Length: 229
Image 1 (cartoon, rainbow, N blue to C red):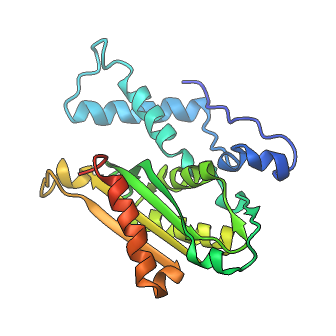
Image 2 (cartoon, rainbow, N blue to C red):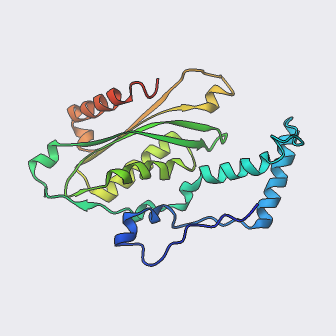
Image 3 (spheres, rainbow, N blue to C red):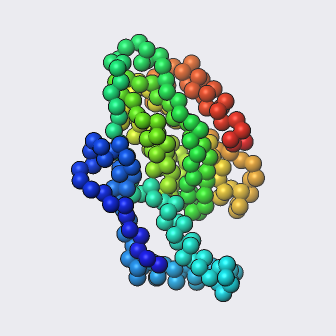
């Protein structure tokens, strides 16, 4: 298997570069050809021990494909959310800023549980009450996926998104709502077939204003209907 080559990153990671996706690929992981072959050998042994025949057209390259899929699914380790920049807004602490909120979602995400390396997936809703900065809508989606594409747990993903948005925006308030299905509970253990895990995170005005929280949750629930049971 050929070594995975990172996307080229040229020059200083500021200004125009940050308008693209360079902040998502600033710490590329490099695995040598020798290590890829060694890892593929390990996976072959494991899959065969579990019962998979590796001498069929459909399974001969499964160890390699599995490793590639795991590598691609954890590309979030290559990014650095500290390089995300915000834009100035024309509201400098006025009343409208404190009363208006921005809500983005549902943002689909897929992650791997660090306990069993099984997938969990669902939707994220991000809200904030702007102060002097706003953030591009596409960057909200990318921020979710940056933290989700790692070995993690739902609670940590929500906390990391919350802390990053709070740092980037210095907003009056930040709210995060995540809902996800965890295959580790559906394919093993208690084998719950219809369980959904929901987590919320509040900062600033969302902590002190129950009406603002309810408005955010109402928007999230209405948009989430039909996407996730």
